[in-house]
Amino acid sequence: MASEVFDSRLRPAIEFLPAMVLGGGGALLGAAPGPFFPLMPGLATLVAAVFLALAGWRFYQGCQILRYRRQLKRLPRYVLDAEAIPYSRHRLFLGRGFQWDQRHSQRLIEARSPSGRRYVEPGRLYRAVRVFELRFEHTPVLAHLARLTARDARWNLLRPLPPVGGDPALHGVGLEDEEPIWMALGERVGHTLVLGTTRVGKTSGVARG
Image 1 (spheres, rainbow, N blue to C red):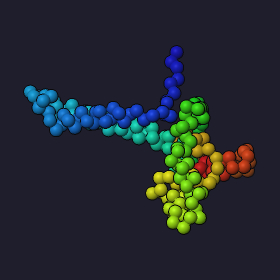
Image 2: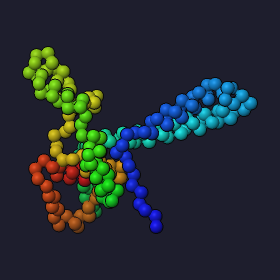
Image 3: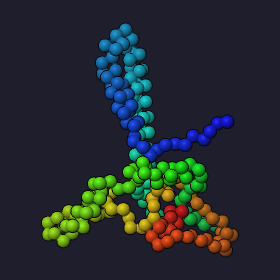
Image 4: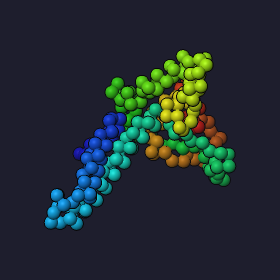
């Protein structure tokens, strides 16, 4: 009986090491095929192309690991102008979401475990910047720098987390499975109950779907 194999994403991005080795080997073969394939230089070109393709694939896999870890800390913005909201005569657009299954439960358990917490919680540099902003917000010179680090802008790699509450990991574990969520208009006569204490993410969760 085949067993379910869970993906393990909350870990170091080890894919970058083989990507670097394969990329270096491909570049070396492409630049100097003679010492390696003196009688068949065309084969060296083929092997170099294969090495570079594998290096690109492994690099892509490593970037996916980093992206997954990043979205567990901070969800990407999801903003729609009023005229851009999908419209239907038969259904009501609620936002974006995904169907929760055992994969997402396993990923959330990993994110909450002591070994995975270091990938989810803000790092030392992030915490140091927040302390700096609080300590020097009234200092004449450093207050300008503190305001820059506190800016919620794309160029600010250490910008503070949005003050919406909640846990990004609850949605981040299935962000790649997101799809538009629609509700039949006939179901609007019913009611929806969202339970949770203050600042746990009820508003942000409903807003994303």
